[in-house]
Amino acid sequence: MSAQQYAVTDPATGKEVRTYPTATDEEVTAAVAKADAAYREWARAAAVSDRAICAQRAADLHTERRDALAAIISREMGKPLEQALLEVDFSASIFAYYATNAETFLADEEIPLQWGEGSALLRREPVGVLLGIMPWNFPAYQVARFAAPNLVAGNTIVLKHAPQCPESAAALHELFRDAGFPDGVYNNIYATNAQIENVIADRRLRGVSLTGSERAGAAVAEIAGRHLKKVVLELGGSDPFIVLSVDDLDATVEAAVVARIGNNGQACNAAKRMIVHEDHYDEFVAKFTERMVSMPAAPLSSEAAACRLGEQVTGAVAEGATLAGAADRGGAWFSPGVLTHVDNSEVSQDELFGPVAMVFKVRDEDEAVAVANETDFGLGSYVFTTDAEQARRVADRLEAGMVFINGVNAVGPELPFGGVKRSGFGRELGRVGIEEFLNRKLIRTVR
Image 1: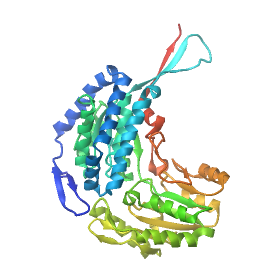
Image 2: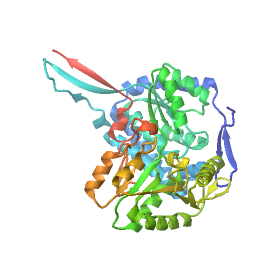
Image 3: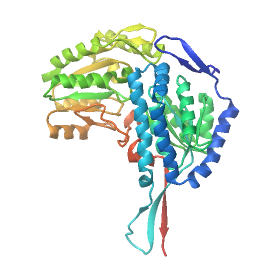
Image 4: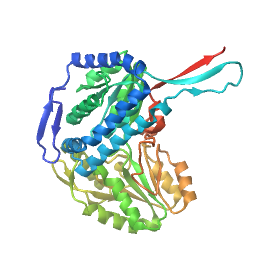
């Protein structure tokens, strides 16, 4: 990879704003060494309360610098400024959540003995140096949900951000330094894939967390497996939005629009497949299509992303799908749209990473569940119904890591995030998020 791989290119204009040199092999090795050296002090000398103070300061700095951070995000990957500000705010809430709850989450846990004398306890300890490999679609939030729990746990971090987000990477590195995290606890590297392979192989590294594509996840998992390193993967998704019964179709349609076009449709857990009961299908499609095609074009993360989405849409139409809206406007710009009659299209099994939705008609609950599960992905899902018992029943049957009933954007730092099947494994956020990279050490005292 060339020294110009890391670059900020404004998707709205296509103009290159700034380039960043790729790290040398020596710089990457030094970053791992710094993280390993810092771990000894950070994990052992710094109390959980001290680490929590740094995390709270990081939360405060996200808030203080929200305008600057949001402007960087918009410049790097085209996110509307209002959404970028919300992303920074959510990132701040994640650091504050772990700062508040760290001591509780990491406290020793007494284990009642079934037989014998003495006592037993479970002690939660950090494991060491972790590698984070982050995507471009949420440049601040993705870092927060990986870094916050692991830093308060006492692990140290080497982080490789997406090549198109080097400015966010630098700003966050500076933020963590200013928050009081000691030198070497958080290390940003502009590394190549070949260098990352060497980092994973390094005996000082204890685990890897990646958010990205299936292809990237499979490659990293293969390397980590060879070196017996634990991996957390958050990969793609083709989340179903199931509409079975409604008392306010307009509100349901609006929820579907929000679930599809947030972040310009570039979210792993966006609702990408609208699965609608035949009683509501015609009216839903008419209202949903009207709302989608009335939305203005917006830039995707890159010209390549817009080209890829355009190819998928064109392929679906060639296979018999009906298209409303959805047009490549040149450069990275793309108009929202809706695909219907996609049941026999290859795209029905694919992930559309942009503001284009697919709509499916189903006869009943059983068919809705079957269509929802008929994918290799299993990240999130949405169920809209007026029948509470049906909602619980469908939630139990969905092959997904997350189910949201009668609502969208119902997220929070306390709620675990992650999927099943080819959407990955492991969890981030919530109490379970801090458990992924801990040594749960048994200490058994006989007398």
